[in-house]
Length: 392
Image 1: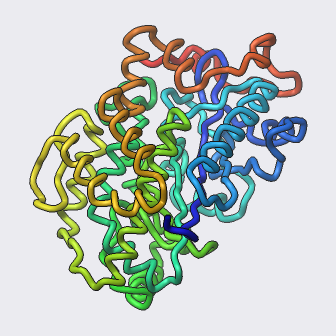
Image 2: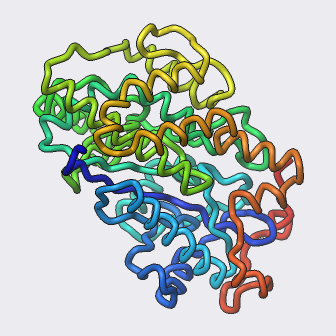
């Protein structure tokens, strides 16, 4: 079994009003409530760009079982903390409804500056992803691996699609989060990198334009982390359930391990044109697994199940050595047969409207269901009309 290939997962969640499903700026209250939860510490519940979002991150893990245990722990404890703050923790890549008033940004200076520079775009960042950090031996190997796994990132977008609703409507996209993120100047599939010096040259050129404020705004679907010795895969939306999240984490680790191994062998990498990868990523965000995907090997359309099968086959030797092959293969098959989060969201809304959708993406823990009145000391500042917003 391959050893030493550790990983960690970050998950972002929305905080929604219990009744309307509108985003509510209660991250501070949720963090305070988390102090009283057995399964989480306050410092493990982090803020994000907007005050209607929270983020959690697992410690470094060696096995997918560890990842699963931490994600279950976080989701249960933070959902209870959200209930104590009279809101719901939502596992969706995009806010299904939005009020007229913008959700305020958090107090971090960088976020305040982003709001000044790109006000409307920041206001629309009610989107949540999952970020998978996979350990790499050094930045040179990591950058080379990034170049080798980039053709498969659109497939991860499709597998991880979980944001079909936005501002009260079905967007027609499986991952609207991908579209919103695509409005930033640096986004989508990264360029091909041969190694660390090539990576740093490209980053320096981008920063030199003055358009990108800092390295944190390199919103590629995968990048080298500047905080950890990892390659960070950012393509998927946050997942509806822990099982799907663990599947995607296992696929991402398998891709990185495979890319590292190919780099050591000097195997010739796939290198589709940037325009093809952009189109493939857009199409993956549009359709998820409900139609053809662009096969990165041929740059032509192929049934989604076949492209996912090719991805799993590609990483199977690494999955076997990691002990993940059965779990990841079964999880990928489940996404194909039972549908992505986007497909399940649409099915829930079709069956039961807004209530069923909210119950799917933001189930309330039993302990939080005994009190549904407005939280004491948390005035409802939304206009009356906004409180009645519904997905149409």
